[in-house]
Image 1: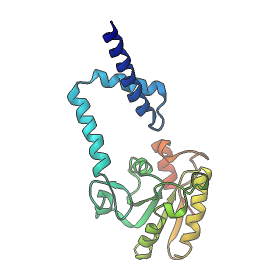
Image 2: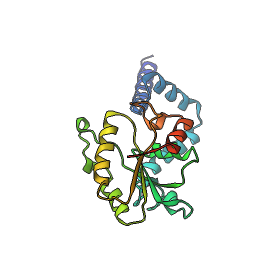
Image 3: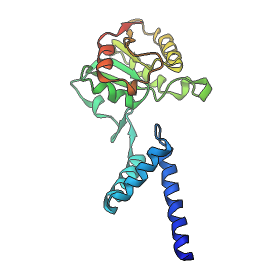
Image 4: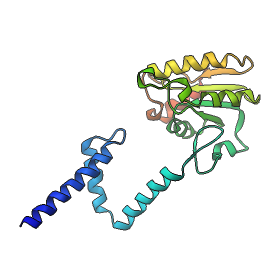
Length: 207
């Protein structure tokens, strides 16, 4: 009986540990984390092992594109290597998830630049922590005619927008536009529906 009780306690600790790990993911509460944990138990061991290997490979081998900071398997991402893209236009986004949201609309055929976040003094994120200098280097190369600022309408997003506008003034021949504010104040671009993003891209305004 003591042996059985010990096994139950150990299994409970294992369940608690995996649930705690899932709960660390953004947008995952304890209840959802528990459901994910129980779902793993319903999978066969090969599927779980394959999932674990994929996570390990992703964390170990994923790269950031040296041009735009997008996630990539290689040093340069497929979008930057695509010769059919409009190389005179760069859409600046906060995160890779925002890039995917815009790509899903199939309405934009230019290049991208992923900042890697927004300026947030409260969180200790300064302009130097973002890929802003890399963006300026791309513009200084001379091929860019328009920069679209697709930044979320949060307080931190507006701060980042203002900072970028000031930096971009050193390139008077480059048109600077912002996506139309059909997106509500405080909305994260990642969670906005495709139709709204399409409208915002197509009706962007010059800054």
